[in-house]
Every structure is written in C-alpha cells, then in structure tokens.
Image (cartoon, rainbow, N blue to C red):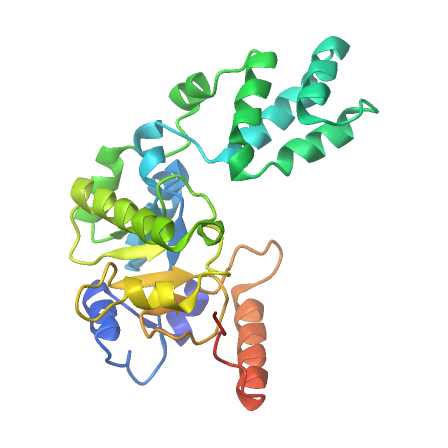
Length: 282
C-alpha cells in the first residue's frame, strides 16, 4: 500500500465512479485495492490497516457464505486433507480411497484427488466428511472464517465498497449463457439488497477466462445494464467492454508489489507493440 500510495492516485469512491463514467483518474494512474471472498481477516486485519492509511477498497462477497452459512468448496477440501493427515485408521483411509476412486498406496494420492475436486463433485466432499465424522457446519460455527452481516455493514459505514462475487464461488465459464447472466444477476441483487450500494459491482469467481464477449456485452448493456462494472484477474490488459476491468493479482509470496507491477508493465508494452493488448473473446 505504501508503494501504490507513493506512485498512484487513490481512487476514492467518487473518483472511481467518475472513472466508470469515462473520466480519466488524473495526471497519474489511479488505483483501488480489491479483496475477494469476504473472509473474516478482511474485517479484523485488512480494513483497519487501510482505514488508518485513508485508502478505500472494494470487498467482493459470496452470497452463500455471509454469516458463515456456507463455505468455499476448496476450503472444505483443505479441511478434509488436514483431517486425513492426522487420521491413523487404515479402514477409514480405505473407505475414502474407494469413494474417491483412487488406489490405497498411501495418503498422497488421496489428498491430491481431494484437492483437485471440481465444483460439480462437491457431493464427494460431503460424503468424505461423513466418513471422517467431520461437520462443516460445526466448523463454520466454531471458526467463523467469513464476515457476518453486521461486520460488512460496518465496513460500508466506514466508506468501503461492497461488491458481489457469485453466490457460491463456482467457475462461471462452464455454465450456459442464460445461467451465467442469471447467476450474476442473482448475486448482485442479493448483495445489494442486504448491503445497499450506489454501484453494482461483480468480480468473476476464480477468473473471467472463457466468458464469451456477448455475455459481457449483455451484462453491460447500455439500455438495461446488469452491472456498473465487472472484474477479471488477467492483469494489465484491455477488454472489449470499458467497464470490464482486469485486476492485477498481488498475492504472490516473496514478490514485491513493485516487481509485480513492473512485470505487468513490461508485458503490457510488449503486447501493445505486437497488437495483442486486447483480450480476445468468442
């Protein structure tokens, strides 16, 4: 945050809104940090730090996880792997291996299979939890990994922006056109009903790669737009719709913000000179 504050203009909510309406951020490029998933650390660690520095942020929330009513399927997989690591029962490991369709040659293959489970295979995670006598609902009640509604409203009162991140954090590119539109609408309407906002913002879960151009254009239809802005994670690139914004992922352990940004700038320069700065979509 120190690095970005020194070299870029902070896009406060009013300036960010002006940018979405087509104005430029000023003589220097602007920035606003974003954080996905609505985890409790956002409320307890991230937001207080940013508030002290006077830096706004956008927090993208999953509808089904507010108030710890649900959990990202990959988190469930991680909890199961942790439980398997400490499990000493060969019979239990055997049952899990049979469920997952892997050979019992140790725990490594089983854990790899669980970590690779897709959204469509969530039922396997639930069955595995039953075998391990593990309750995800109890885990959520005790550990509370996500923010509750009161905490989210408190962030809004302090000037932070709340956006939508999908109902259940599934990868949307695998859905049909109408399903994607309905999912985005449902997520935004649900979040804005619980946490009213002047902006309708949506960040695609995982990635926007594979989302057809016609869907983005429908979401940003000038007559009846579903969103005021949508977001991907492809780095410093241009997209076919002005208000579909590509973010620069910063969570790269051991690599400074300065180095990440310089790498993005070099790549962007190369792409522009090759005529490939625009993301291609079907």
